[in-house]
Image (tube, rainbow, N blue to C red; front, side):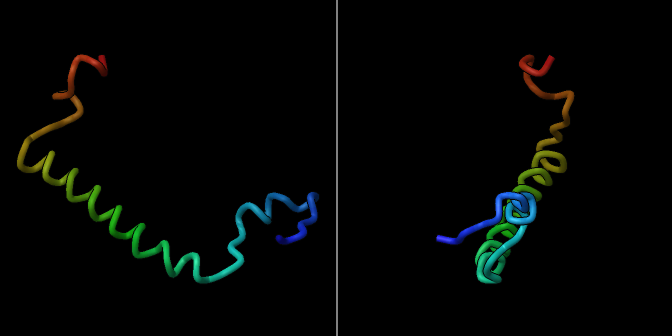
Length: 59
């Protein structure tokens, strides 16, 4: 376990200790982004869904 200086906790929250973290997470983040873009594209272009065509729940 690492010993941290509690006066610098903001820096600790936003720092990554290993570059392996980004190497592992970056491809997954790209895939999730492409998947969500694909779903949005299908909804808008092929199903012709908009924010107005939602259910009554949003009104």
